[in-house]
Image (spheres, rainbow, N blue to C red):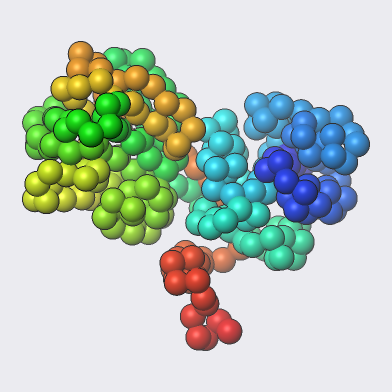
Length: 270
């Protein structure tokens, strides 16, 4: 078993990564944490290609960045602020890795979005693709197509198409629903719609979403990669053949959700 370790560039993350590295027989380290430890490092792309499983130490941004490069199972440890996507917190990292080494875990798969801009494929989205008018303060007209049929014309700041995993991210902040990440559905949510009848929608992931706009706009994939999107462009979103794969110690989504949103644990967990 060859492990990979990818870390957020912070002292806390590096210290956890060093301790985990000493627990593993065979591990590839990303350049920055490798430099901290004093050994030879590897690029994220090399780790994602060569490792069988990957430990990711950081926040949701580090996790999403890793998922853009791999379909290998990842074990995310939170050293960020919120860490919705992380399996465990920093203080539980060592015990968590011990459980994995004892083969006390399972793999959970989550859908990704396949994105075509003018028929050219972009990076898959694990969380969401967000569309926003480029000129702040201007009203954007967005035509939403479902299976090539015009479903709705929405006036507002833009639109979000999210996976269930991304339902607790940007989509939640614009009024979208929280969806169990094990489900195979899409969430489509308008951003600041002029008419409030334009509401978030949950639909089966076998649907094809098409989007057109009337003004120069920007699209962002998982808050990492951004592209210009103009009135003559066509955007198409479907379910990707790739999956995000997480190493899970327990089925803890609802407990973690409560903790992250409320800032405390349920009474029976205290």
